[in-house]
Image (cartoon, rainbow, N blue to C red; front, side):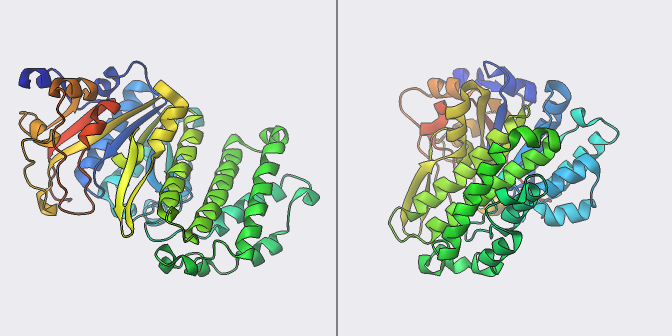
Amino acid sequence: MATDIKDTVHAVEAAAVLRLLPARPRLLALGEPTHGEETLLDLRNELFRQLVEQEGYRTIAIESDCMAGLFVDDYVTSGTGTLDEVMDHGFSHGWGTSAANRELVRWMHAHNDGRPASEQLRFAGFDGPLEITAAASPRQALIALHGYLAAQVDTELLPCTAEALDGLLGADDRWTDPAAMTEPTRSVGQSADASRLRLIADDLVTLLDTQTPHLVTATSRDDLDRARLYGRTATGLLRYHHWMADTSPARMTRLCALRDGMMAHNLLAVAARGPVFVHAHNSHLQREKSTMQMWQGPVEWWSAGALVSARLGQDYAFVATALGTIRHQGVGTPPPDTVEGILYGLPEDRCVIDAPRLATALGGTLPARRASPWFGYAPLDPAHLAAGDGLVFVKDVPPSR
């Protein structure tokens, strides 16, 4: 079996990843089993550079707030703002403090300098404006969508005035109360104002769609794409807040599914403009159902990757990442009866694996699933191995610099 496994191993290069696939995908997704490790983000950066320089990819999408990501895209394409400002305001989940993320933005900005728009690199966040404990107010997205339409269509076609919209939204802190995640009665999501806002958001998105023949000539492609992003975000957030106020046993399943649904729609929209390199947690990109143990019990839902794969077929490819040790996080040498343990016995410090061929080489008995010492690390599920296109293995992850 060891010889068979060695036959599946390749150098960690973009070309080696693409050779595993039947065709160059429109969405090439690289997952990670934990967040915040600079080594994994450095590897992501290098693969993106190779995809840009050798394969013609022009966009990277990461698991960060889609609205905040617009600041990053503006900076790398037109130099709006400063690098420090972009790192402070262009990322969610604390990703702006990452040295590797900073280097990614710096490199993209330098690469684009002097190039025409058609050759420039683009950046996208594809997560909703959501945290694990809260969701943003829909204010930013709704006001932006209303403002775009108000500048382009007859006023009488709008479902309400800007002043009425502002009044219904109210103070942002009533939307962002973190207690609402565990206490549904604290959520504003099923109030009369929120219900009215859902109808208004739907009307604004419908107006955007029905005015498309005019808008494609009256505004730029980028402005129209951003208006569509505002619409997806506003309706997605209002739907998310609605189910935050739910008290049924299915509440957390719905919320996890809604978040990944927002991710999937954002990825499909970005992919409509050309090939995209995507980076996020394995659980958001895999083709199988995702699971999580939460305070009220286990939750299971279809990931963004599963949803996108169902739409794109071979135009979607997923490469998971598995790790050997993360000793500074208490993750020691993997047991030999796990996938990570088997790969840890290889001489390579990092490698690309043909995942379906590895699954075949391992035979009919699946390896054990590795135990996780802490919530932030999700070991590879051996049952999902054959459903991926490839696997990146990193033997040892040192502390972040």
